[in-house]
Length: 128
Image 1 (spheres, helix red, strand yellow):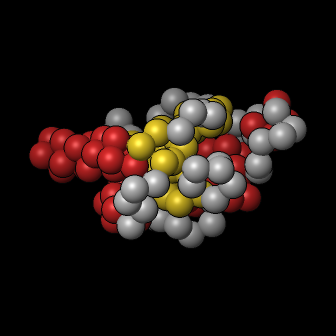
Image 2 (cartoon, one colour):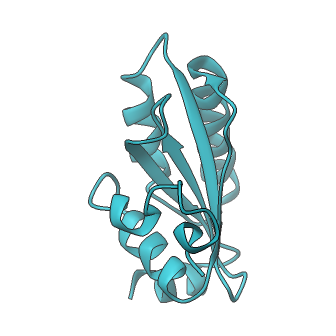
């Protein structure tokens, strides 16, 4: 169930997932298929959010783990220096994919989205 049904004051996350990164289409599909959405209210410093995403990208590349939109997310986040950001997640109903959402400080603009998958097969399935 999408988050707006649970918390009416929350924005429609599925509608916010347009074309910020290549992971947006798969993330939107995960929500529509019953994925769990969680958006945190607390603000996080840019350097922390960007640092975690960049580390995750390096780690994934080094180990050959499939990701979608993570490289694009790191580039987008790099443009938002000295800002505070909000983050959230989408966990697919089948638990085969996990998405990280990156929002502006108000939580009203989705800046980027990245996806993580346990296997290349799961990545290919999510891209369909």
